[in-house]
Image 1 (cartoon, rainbow, N blue to C red):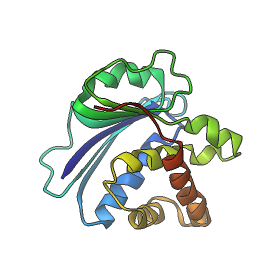
Image 2: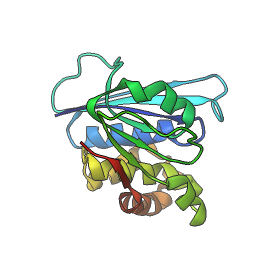
Image 3: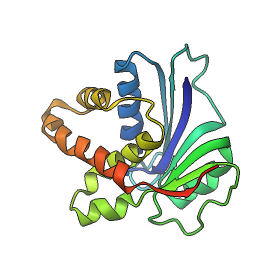
Length: 183
């Protein structure tokens, strides 16, 4: 099993953190992983993306241009990465701020209203974990016990008290995921 993932959105949405938690979780599970961030100089509010590869086998290169999965959090990223999903692949997007929905017919598409739901719940900071939960519902590339370990390794110790809230957000994300199109 090899899963090549791009996570993209605005800086400040937890894009890089989501990728880091996923990569740490894969490593804790004994998988080979690659985590390669990319962001503009402005960080918050600028564009950010991270490619994550999780594999049972050695990873020959972290540089990829076609992805099994795209997790998209804004229109600019949807415009840039929709066509980079391999045919038969997966695209998950948060509809908040999306003005032109995905149009491809050869991929599986899901949406997750995580921005809206996390704001309603007063938990905007765990929005990204809801999105991660939605992804893991469709593609369980890592198990929840390892998500906890990934959080422990990626969050500073002073934030470890927030791990249960983050794990709850992963569960809520699984419940929020909506099918748009499956092959």
